[in-house]
Length: 304
Image (cartoon, rainbow, N blue to C red):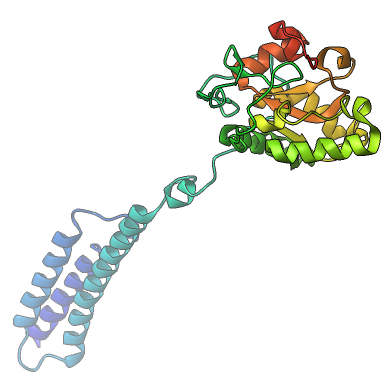
C-alpha cells in the first residue's frame, strides 16, 4: 500500500513536469526536445518502480502524457516545413514569368517633335536605298523625280521596304490619335503611269492633266518612295487626317511633297494626300525650313 502511494505521487510529479515542456505554436524552442525526452525518461522510471498490481489507469495516464508531447512536436515540425516551402514558392509582386510576358509599352508618337530622332529611336527612318542605275539623279542622297528630272523607263524598284515600314509606324501613330490613314497608291511602273496620264489627257486635255498628273517617267511613284493616302482628291484636304499628316509625317521620314500655295514651284496643284519618303535626317530640316523639295535643293520643275 505504501508503494502504491509513492507510485501515484511519482506519477503526479511526472505529469506536472511534462506539461511544462509543451510547445506554443509559432514559437519553436531549442529546449523542446530536451524537455520531451526528460518527460519520457521520467515516465519510464516511474512505471518501472510500480509493482505488478499497479492500476491500469495509471499506466494509461503516463503513456498519454508522452504521446501528447510527441504529437505537439510533430505538429510544430510540420508547421515549420510548410511555412518554409511557402516562402520559397512566393513570387514578389511584379516578378516572375508573368512580368516577362507583359508587352513593352508603346511609344506615344502624337506629339510634334523639333529634334530629329537618332538611329536608336523608335521613329528613326534610315535613308532610302540608293541605286547605281544610269539615268537617276541624286541630290544629297535624295532621288529626284519631277518635271525637270526623269527616270528610266525600265527602272522598277517597287515600293521601298524602309518607306513601307515607316509608313506603318505613321499609320499606327495616327490610329492612337483616333485617325484612320491608309495606303491608297504606292509604287507605279512607267507603263502604268502612262496609262493613268493618257486617260486624264483624254478626259481633261494635256494642259489640265499636267497640273495634277505626271507624265510617264516623271512620276515620284516610280521611285518607290511616294505614297498617296486615303481619298486621292480634294475631299481629303482639311480632314483631321490631312491636318495630322501635314504636321507629323516628317517624324517618320516623310514630307508633304506638294503643299498649298507652291504650285508654281513644284509644277503640281496642292495634294494633301501625297507624301514622299526621304528619311528622318532629311525630313526634319526640310519640314523646319517650310520649303518644297525644289526650293530646298535649288532646282526647278517644268517640262523642258
